[in-house]
Length: 239
Image (cartoon, rainbow, N blue to C red; front, side, top):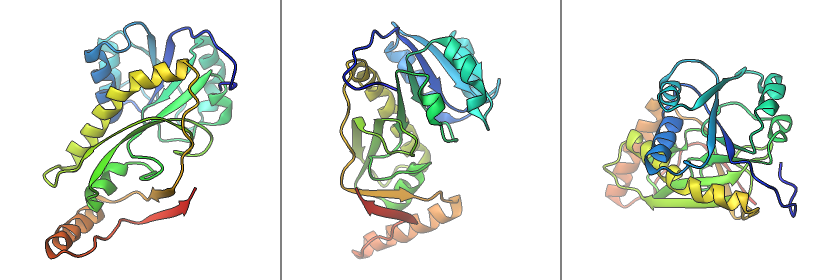
């Protein structure tokens, strides 16, 4: 990881890491490709399988695939070192990335689908849909050994509309991520240290589709009656 205060010469090679067949990395990479945001970068995609929608996109766009052990990424450390990339960008890897792996890179950043320190946790868009907050968004932050915990590099937020489905919310978060990621990469390369997360942190637990819809429907009725909304299961604490 980056030694603060040490100036690096960046080699413009980036490793993205994410699952092979999920929507988030596909949308982000598609948008980056359309905007030509990484045309001066060498991009490789670290993933778990040699098939899936993200893998298909990468193959069509000449993005090299690096297959790793999904359950034990540390077993691929030597291979990843040999690839000689400076920056690791997480786009939806569902396992903890250890310090041993993070230390391969000059820096590692995560693309989180929530406005940190609020809406920590996986699939935060489902809790957004159920809770109906006034706004939601995306955060790019530095990675450490703890989930969704590093300094914030950049955020973007938008208004939530009742007409939005969970899929629309998820897609909009992914598109916001793609819009702020190029600037975030630039800031990282300029050794911007980011802002420490402050205030109230909330970690939202994973929801079933049934629970998501049940709480959503209850909140719609509460809004109609002018009552306080209920919130999906979570833990909260002050930072």
